[in-house]
Length: 184
Length: 248
Image (cartoon, rainbow over the protein chains, first blue to last red):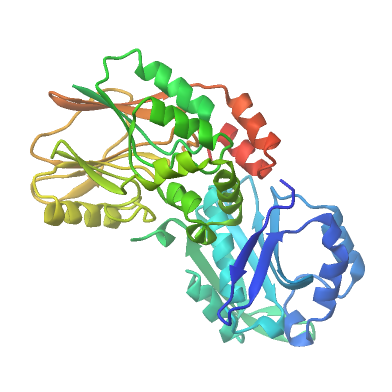
């Protein structure tokens, strides 16, 4: 699934971002995006995104059936990255996992909520029933963004994960029931 | 008298033609399209022309509205949005005028309520018990005397029933005729012609007879590969072609 389709969206401050799926040509822009993130936003990421080879590997191995990444652009610059991760077999085949990172300059403009909403809508198109997200308890703003997009907290696991510096941190498990997002 | 109900054609000309061939084999008095004639697939103008030519009574769907008023398309996800932009470019002014003239809710013969998503709202879904209860409450308040409603939007076949005590339940699906109880209320979804989502790819529709009131769900195979080829030729997202085969 790969071509140049895209969608323009307006943020709370009136600025416009363009959303489109990640393509191989985004390697340089995505590397710059992740390398420019302050350390506090990289504390809990699953990969060392400052390593250009990690980004190279992502952009060279795009498989939308397993990971559907959407980038948000302000002009030519990447300002947000959200991805939907799917497993096609087994007891979690109906569940997608969401990961999102937003440029600090674009915090509090509704971009995080917009990106997560986009994934909720896409998950419905892919026939998924639930979405799953794991967030550090000490990031209440991020938890609030997921809550706004329809997720609710299901559990807190104390001291489960370690941040970049090896400190143990509590994790909140949040779940979105996709079907009930479409109420009237 | 028999009525054929079709819904969510979504620009799938091959599926629509196959369904009409089957409908034409029966003694059908009226064909009703419950909305979303366009969007997702690659034959929007051909589907509008065929529905016009066959004088199929139609209801406005959320994709139909977004294709004629693009500000509504912004609320759709990136896949659906792309198909809507493409549909809007493909439709000629006369096709758009046809869609503009459609109503989102209609009452047929003072007896049957027709809507796309939920009564009065083509965007809303009717998938869960609480939503069915709301729809029945709407009918009791706003359309007293109407016991049966037909809707689409979810791409899933469904029959909801409200008994005389007010208990709402979803009935099991069957390929056999289902006799409707004259004392009870019903919400009935025929499934989708052009993008079924029940893990099977065949085009879905429904035959309703009014004396006595019975329904029968039907499905028919169509030229899937041709529909997929058109999506690819139009350079719409590949997933839209793949999903037709898997019924997602």
